Amino acid sequence: MKRKYFFYEEDSRPIQPTSADIILRQQLEYSISKYFYEGCDRNIQDLLSNCRWYVTTHASVLTLVIECPDQVTNWRVLQKLVRMAVLLQKIVSSAKIRVCPPKSEGIPFEMRVDELSVYRDSA
Image (cartoon, rainbow, N blue to C red):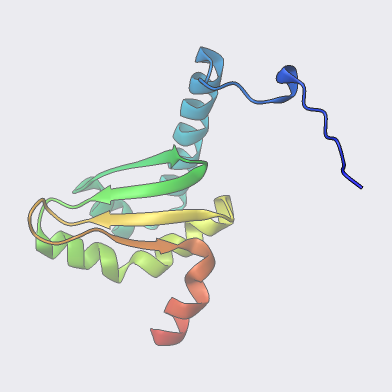
């Protein structure tokens, strides 16, 4: 027996986000950034102040991006990554952290906050 499915145009999501969608996404990213930063201890806040960092949503995945100015800072950020992931996971259960070294000095490292058990076991 062949099934027929009816799909109405108004049931689909819009191809292009509306200006309201964009504003709401920006407000969400800002709020998550604020809660994340305020939840960090002073050492992590100081470390982040040396970097360019932001929260973004791309393809429905929330990502904390940390762009490091030099390799020393990059290494220090990587050492604090598990602590930052624990905090981020308290705010949003499904997210990634991407740590970017200076351009031409390596490739970004990414971890998902739902992978924390792997990193805790190896730490």
